[in-house]
Image 1 (cartoon, rainbow, N blue to C red):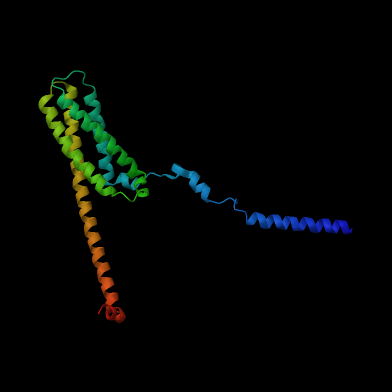
Image 2: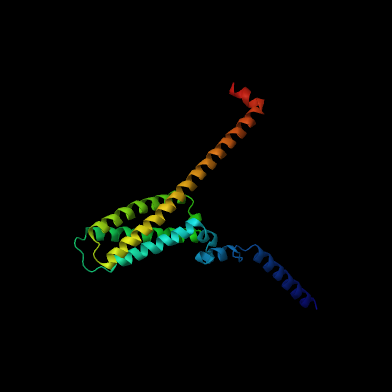
Length: 208
């Protein structure tokens, strides 16, 4: 009987010791590995951005740039070829850069890299694309306008120019509004700090 009681006591101490050691063990399962393991699975599409004016314009820009690039790639012979090569480079570059930005904005990936001013980056992209698409379309229309593919490329080039121009206009307006809001916030912060200093005379005595 005594041996049984000692055995039961030993088992109770062992179980309590294992519970304490298990509670203090650094290898307990936590929710952190699950969130880390999630990775890109937590990405969600932002329908509000795609329904907005800038999102729709960006989708249109990607489609128009792609169609213009496909039209220019179907041309087998050219004379001269400089305008065609320039249009090909502009349409391909605009499609790739705008497509990447569309993915970043629609999936909110740009929020994970706050060090970059994405609004300014998008504005620079739309401004440059507007300028180069306009120049490339004019050059292609002046030098290569014989086949149907060349004419189609010129048409879609000007349509892409219009889409990028509207996006640039809206981007400039959004940038101005953000600057006004930032200046207003700085003014309010400065007024608040000045009131705090006026309400504390000991700071004024230290300044004098």
